[in-house]
Amino acid sequence: MVLSNAYNYINVLDKAADASWIRNDVLANNIANADTPNYKRKDVQFETYLANAVAGTDSLDETVSTIDLDGLNATTYTEQANLSYRLDGNNVDLSTENVELAKNQLKYYTLMDSINNEFGRMKTATRTS
Image 1: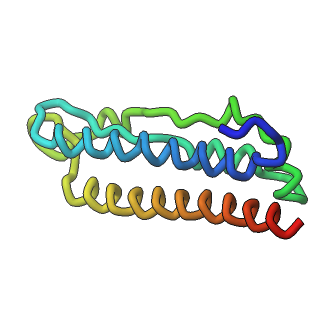
Image 2 (image 1 turned 120 degrees about the horizontal axis):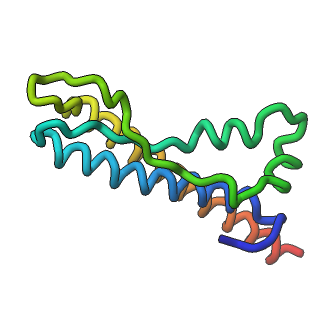
């Protein structure tokens, strides 16, 4: 994490990438436990926290520059613990997990690309100044 408000946009992207990395592990764990009796699907909550942190402001730049990064963390939760797709009590659907994993990987690579672009802009700005 870069410790300056000038870099908070990158820091927010970094937090989102961390959440995506955690989600990747959680989804892989769901897939690995697809045949485990009574296993319940888990997921990661982050996007709602981010949306709440930037909601209701006129300037996204101002909001991001003052965002509380310590309060912007991903949490893992058990999804629909009372729901089971099968008689063994498991609620993991492999097709859904694979789609979510592919979607999450695209999100992670997009976030990494955005972070790299931001650093590239900074590098260009410092060269031309």
